[in-house]
Image (tube, rainbow, N blue to C red; front, side, top):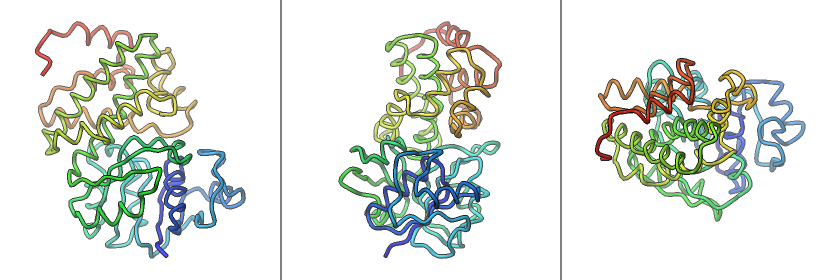
Length: 323
């Protein structure tokens, strides 16, 4: 029996647990809140974050991460990922499912894991994979990235099903950045809809957002082709166009005139694009890459400018060549 330990009992961690459990993998689903874990045990369902999906017998909710597993899935929000590494053994196989950058350091999740566990074998999972749709088994695809091809293939076999087509990649940097940066752009797309603009505006936001994502990624060592794939444009489109996306809903609420605190309270879960926006802008400044859209979104999140004013500032920038 293959054993997995999923760290993070929110909607994403729960959806991943349901998915791999359906393949016959025995899953320990870890959460830090004892009352929440007790609820998962009692109801065999995550009624708070992902209601309507009964746990199969293969899922066991726990408050103490197992000492042994064949692989660990890191589905903790990026700001808590470093602390979550304390639950890992010295040399684990880790599948990183968190899509964000570490606040304050702007480091990718693989960098964080390898700093805390230098002996880890790291893979990253990213693609157009909204939690509720993955749990429902709607056909989609994802990417497993690792610098170790054999490791990526082994993990691919654990996740591949008739409803999830899994590709592999060696572009760890590109796949990670695609998953993190698209959350920032989804906030921008949500703002556009919240302001009452149309599809032309949102199309421009998505296109220019992808441009910024790719240029920043290439400056940091990624391949531009990665941003044209599932973990780039695929994930960006799914996240920036869906009401299921937390980041989109945060942006939409801001566009409608609500404050950030109110928007986050209404969602009731972490929206990774909020802290990642500032981390991404810092990365861009270090790399001397222009990211006007990311900067505008970060200013709105900081309360330094209103969404409509941010749009005006972007529209009034000096015209230039598209490429």
